[in-house]
Image (tube, rainbow, N blue to C red; front, side, top):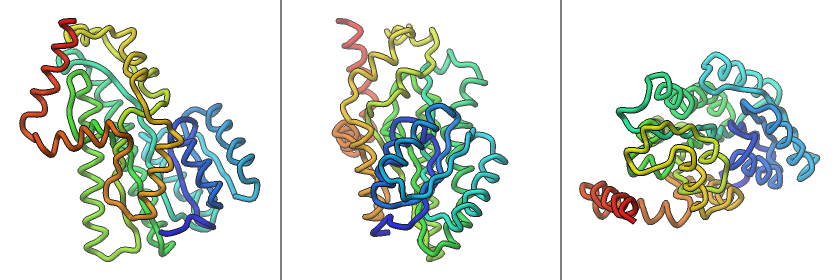
Length: 280
């Protein structure tokens, strides 16, 4: 897909962060949009920003919980009906959660998996038939650098993002094998300046790792160096290049390289680094 002009893109998690920036930049490139988010106020703001950027593109919006499978399928059907076609689905919605493995409750773990991974599965399966019908489709699934490396205190998040990576890589292979006119890209952001870390839920169990549950998310987000605007640009460039994997930010590039060079020993490196931080 070399151009987004006159295409139709559906985006989950469009109420803020990367989802919002993707919508704005796609509108700038004359792409029509179907936007969704569980946050209606943020979603409405995005719609206004998109219309301001390009009043000529068609924009629809829908409050949506991506973990609700039937709701996602209903939305996909509505998007296809409202816009007459769908070319792209950005399965972007996600949440963060901090806890040790001993410390999390099953309901917290399941919520992360239902949104971060289940949302990707739901969006992919719901939109794939319409993407095939369009004759030129692309599925963009947001994993994370934590879908490439694992770190202490984020087991649920790691599990969900590793799952997205495996799912998307399998999807890409199946699409290639069947010569479908649809492709797939797995996106792996490093630290992006969005609200996801600040708004993440963290329980007291992370104290065992030397973290303060009340400030862990804020301290982590303070170290993020890549803007959502830059992230969206990299993602859209990756789609045009039909990249199988897109790394976003120098931190993601570095950590991916570390995992490639030290696939078995990188966890020891990370553990020692965290222990050294605790000792200070």
